[in-house]
Length: 139
Image (cartoon, rainbow, N blue to C red; front, side, top):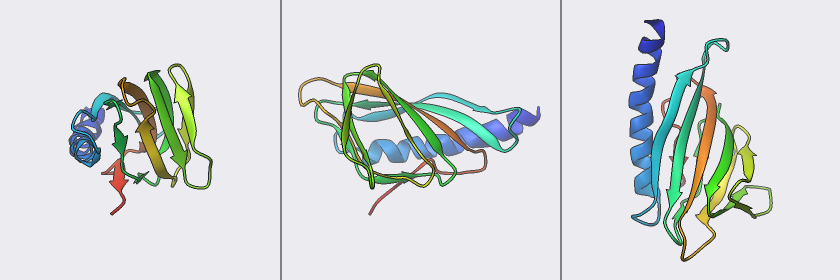
């Protein structure tokens, strides 16, 4: 029962976050879809949240930050993704490759490398359970 009290409000917050992510994408075909969410039982106060980020051909996300507590592992499921965290070089990741973002990273580039084929990645967050928004977009 305790997990339900933690997970249900978290899922509601995640849902609101996903709506913001979808709206912030540059192309209407880009989307963020919940994949998994669960409190980590042996790490009090932490949750594991996974989302699928789909980019249409030429799709991109605006620069953004993630929750201050978030450590993110990203796995490219299909296509190729161009990513850059502030202070690091821009890099293209192909299907089967992965990368990470440390807490407090500024994600300045996140886009589909192809103008003709879609791309998808799985982003897995280890985050403080009480964090309300997973993503905050630059203005």
